[in-house]
Length: 126
Image (cartoon, rainbow, N blue to C red; front, side):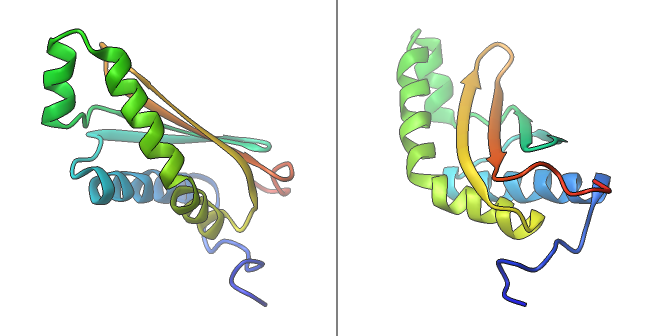
């Protein structure tokens, strides 16, 4: 069985916890700072990873000068470049193919939502 076709080793709450931890690690690695909290939710063919906190010092400074749109635009550009890395992380953990990915950042409170859409509905038992 190839790595891509291998079913995930974890399921349910353990899988969701792993996805949250993996996403925090990825954010820390690529942004230099990661979220303070993360929680994942899966429903049928959707995965949501909700992360709180973790703005960089530069982003916090930009927000103090009312540049929310610039922070959001930078994050979106960065997420566009990171799509393959993040979807690959989710595919390896779940054993399912991701067909779409979106990211959104909100402020006050600082929340980032990553949404992944899978090719098929959740296998029975999830």
